[in-house]
Length: 281
Ligand code: IPD
Image (cartoon, rainbow, N blue to C red; front, top):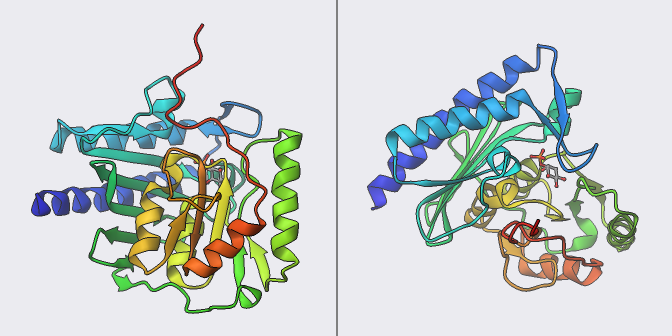
């Protein structure tokens, strides 16, 4: 099996590079922007085109594999992670950035077997940075090994997070109160790249000590979670338990102690899970 997953990973890297070229080219053209769950949850024809391209090319090579793709799920496909080999795809992580030309946009491809991520590929396509990780074999950026920061003091750290796409006032209040508490620890600074996948790769690269968010989806974090852990980092739920990819909550940090400190400051809430059954008509 090991060699089969390597060839799947090689395929994912090639597909992500190809997808990134399509995304870069589309940035030059006029875009048709559409809304999904709300007026701040955006999608473009490029998201849909890139996801189709990736899925088509994978299906040709691995016809029995399954898929969870952001835009397929938006179009009604099930979001269920089984034990079967499953490609978890975000064709454009940072769609809002893409729409505005804000220069952090990534193609994210995670691959899970028995519900465990075996490899992750995040291509930050404007920076031309290819982040990769294979279970047990380390994490890399453009072929160079990645290592999380060795900073032990949260007060000397940069923490990243995002506002996400919920504008529910209660959720927004919790997001702000968590940020306020973390900022006032105090920490050196807070950041957000506008893409969960890139935020996680920044933790893996050692320039940000931790990233947390409530409201992300499995396709935003599947690849990045392995890149963080293979770079020596730690993942957990915002409640302090084990990371559950479907729960829409994540803390990714350079160390358990910084992750646990963030958990203590977060006002948690639980959005509807990615694998929740669709509401009955
Ligand atoms: C979004 C980005 C953003 C995060 C949102 C995600 P998308 O993904 O990762 O940084 O705050 O929670 O949904 O919609 O651009 O693929």
